[in-house]
Image 1 (spheres, rainbow, N blue to C red):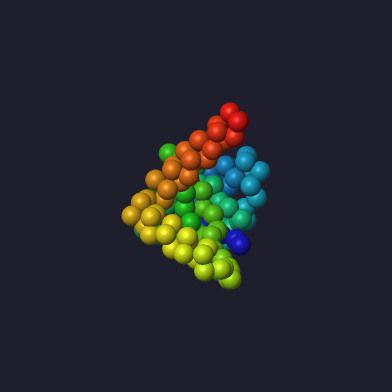
Image 2: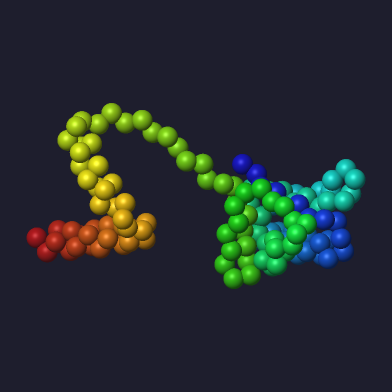
Length: 131
């Protein structure tokens, strides 16, 4: 799935587009640059788009498709992740255990749950190695 970044065709945005294009070229990330039919918009498209200056995305005349992830001044526009539905047929004992787990983790943050799983895994690994 491709993402896009659309800017008004101004001198500042032309410079920003060149910077974005060169940054992506340096990182071997191919993007396409085009203009709208009326030449009022600059359109950048690619699988991902690296934006070296986060201020570009905060302008009122900027639009994009996808999700933005920033670290410092560097931002990356990526395709939105789509969830998947999986149908499982479980026995009643497993359903009961899953319900207990769901109730246990419902009051915790995702970070807390992952940290606890990680700590338990380390403890079990150490126990296996000591046996």
